[in-house]
Length: 163
Image (cartoon, rainbow, N blue to C red; front, top):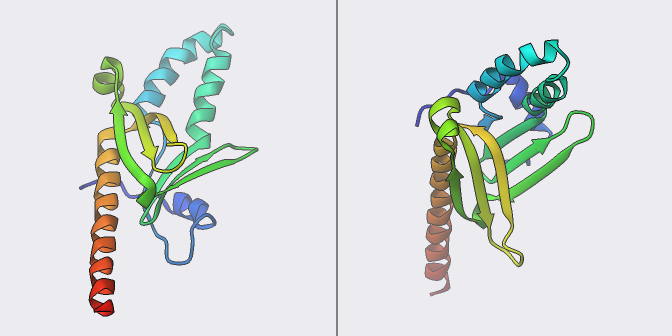
């Protein structure tokens, strides 16, 4: 699957959140097309003071939301001054859903990604306005399948060792 490689700035920013043998596979944020279309729609309104709060919110979303996929987990990092980090181990992800409106699908090329994780409370992680959501969903599914295959092979080896 072809995708734009992450920048050295993004890699440097994420290094402090990774474990020893963990590597970043994919990094994204809100969709670029969504950002620029809304920016140019809100900019004239900002000139007459109506759209300043909305323009500020859009700029904050672009700067403060980072979504990263590593070989072990899915990371969501939010915040500029304060920070909230949400992680979901790939082994705990049960399924991923993409929700796209007409505008998100054909105009913005964004969507909402819903990640369901296993566990007691069946956590649901919703990521809004992510760029190329179908590509991100496929990548998560490929990584979780790979982990499942590795776990199955490891289990077979352990069973053989017990015999």
